[in-house]
Image: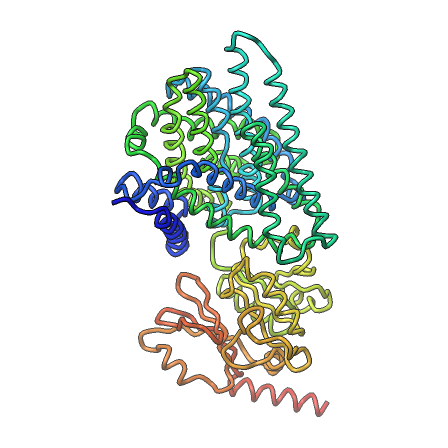
Length: 612
């Protein structure tokens, strides 16, 4: 039974998002699940073949999607991130890419049996890693900032370079194998590449200028950027295939570094679109493969090539190119192992397979099999090994969830102390040095600066933290902090504390800008008063003999429930809309009145001070 194109589109979207959700739910690499889903509905069960269903639109859809994904990734490439990392990133993107090209070409010739001409074309292409695979992996594994930034920059910068190397190798082959030696083709290639960079820079500067001047209204900003990205990709790519990716990368990097105020407004929207595109494209590519191609992957020459690329070519290119760059042995080992290939490698290799076969290179028919073999093995191996390897090399921030508290005052400092006791990393952020005296005196980690400033984004490492609690004396500011970080942390992980009557902004709806901390209606003023009256943070572990119901019955009327911790270390905060309740084995943290004995001591001290 033939299914409609509409059904195919629905199935692609459904499987893509389902794969992302399963990856999040069970902490699995999303790209592995997406590849498996595509293979199952495609070559294994034959439910759909997107390449046949979309027909002539298949390649343009993939190309435009890759351009948008690459642009979205390059929006995050701010040069301010390169502090201390400029040298290794430059080395990897230049010398490392060249070494990987030469070694990859030799491997393709001697291990896979490809001719020299085809080997050098595919060797250039396979230096790519790409944001389509690197970004999902970085999103799921908490790497330390240095290796995370290196992998991100390499994935985005080397992507267009790899495509250009493949195009350059093909042009060189055409030049030397043709009867008439005409250097104009090579000259045209270099001119087209230079034009692509300039055109991308021009598009980025123009869009930035129009945004700042106000020529584009807010509701049109994202649509305009989308249209310009497609234009920026298509025009250079029509001149020379592959230069379009270089152009959109230049455009994204330009926008990321000219400092326009509205960049973050459409960056989050682009991230959402990018996730949708990555999900859909992986399903489409995997479902369009033929069963023979998959079975051919397990032939000895293909397996040998893939293993040599993973265990020899990649580590050698990284170790040789980063000599004297300042990277530690652990960082070199991690970066030297992680190099999953993705959409760009698959799409561009199919293009070269066609034109090389047309040029008379019969062994080019192996390119699709070779590419998919490298993609599927690297995606699985690197997807499952990144987290454990990073922990082994002490390059992972994986551990108990961390908390950023915005606002330094007696309550937030005592709250931070309670997090420290549970083993969770905590950081207090405040722009007032005077307010931070509470954190300094208590020995709590703090950051002096404005949490909403762009400078803080580059100076403060937020990767270890999963929650944000805004607890300043201004309600509107608390809401603004929560609203700003909600797209990054998720609505369920941002909280605010009602500052009290003085800082209350009645124009702000309670649900705007995050969830209210504590189920009881209690203000920051009241919480600070409780701290000054010697209220204590108590940890109570629930057991078979003392369950949650019994705990609630014994609760003091003036106690305040704040959060509870699972045995795994996961934290759940008390809030109006909380759905999870503590169970046996959990530890409940509450703010409770002092005991009667402590109250007697306090009264004696007060009487003594009055008598004196």
